[in-house]
Image 1 (cartoon, helix red, strand yellow):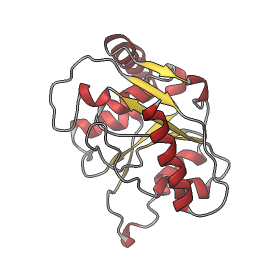
Image 2 (cartoon, one colour; image 1 turned 120 degrees about the vertical axis):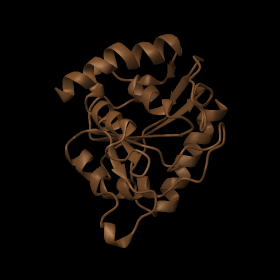
Image 3 (cartoon, helix red, strand yellow; image 1 turned 180 degrees about the vertical axis):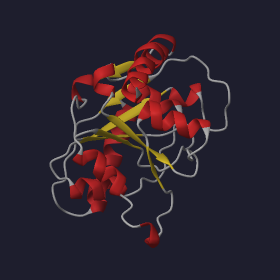
Length: 207
């Protein structure tokens, strides 16, 4: 039932909304991973970011997507939390790690071990439109843990005008997604890997 609901929502709601009403345009879509394990990283300015990323995939492919969301915002028992889990296969993570919480990447590791595609926002939270916030190092630690798994950067533009932080009513505007060259862990340290990602995002925004 869960898979049927996800497939129906993707086919009837998500793709028509993003590709039709919002005119989602994709550059270098051939770089997208079609099977997992893989990590998709994107800039984050709107709740519609996740819809845009899901719309890049077919209903069959989208069934393997799992989005990482903030535990305190998408809490269990809330409507938005239910939607995130049932429709987007979301896994929750704490914004601030506590030693008592154990491995902060355990949920992400389970997704990759299951051969699925993980959606991760390295900024950690929605930022100001058009401004890339400081990237968190979690994706670098994941890349080091899974050196053979591709990390694919996707730069979204226009989504921030549909439903920016603090907005309630979405507006149908043109959205673009630029898919960058997949990155792999090649040694060094996490700071080097994060610097590569920052360059990838900056290059896409200037293209």
